[in-house]
Length: 67
Image (cartoon, rainbow, N blue to C red; front, side, top):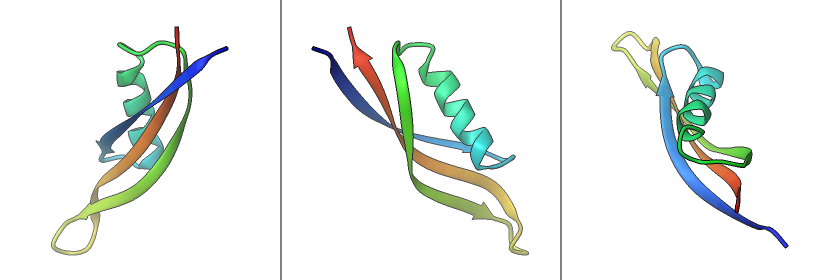
């Protein structure tokens, strides 16, 4: 029998959604083993005064198996 755990992360990137998700997974993998997947719950953007996107933010849940 295996047990899985889910943690929630908030990450950001000026480059885009995929870069934010990659950065979050890379960072959490430094301390969490057996990562099996992730769900992106929410996507937000920070904009400049002219409406251009300056930063992408995602909230995601990471699933991993507990040893």
